Length: 100
Image 1 (cartoon, rainbow, N blue to C red):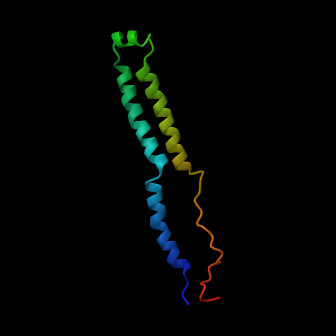
Image 2: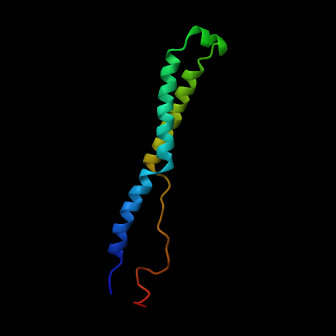
Image 3: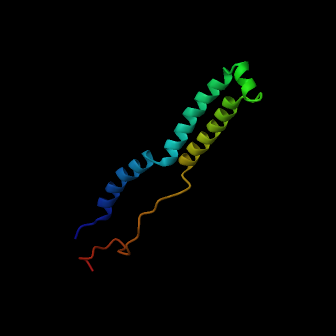
């Protein structure tokens, strides 16, 4: 009669760490922040000729700021983790079938 609760907790830790590392919110947030920084920098160096083409609106600057805000929101969502994945309950209550 072995206690399986200790065995499953050691197996859950690497899967949980891997799931946290490859969470889609982290990837999307990082990409939006990187592209937002690039567009914001490009927006600061926009020429008058390009501004005239865009009806006087600095599109790179505004979209860069928007992407930065969206990326930070995704990263905050990832950090706060409002969704928790619970392990499925098989109804065994920690007792092996052989012990029943």
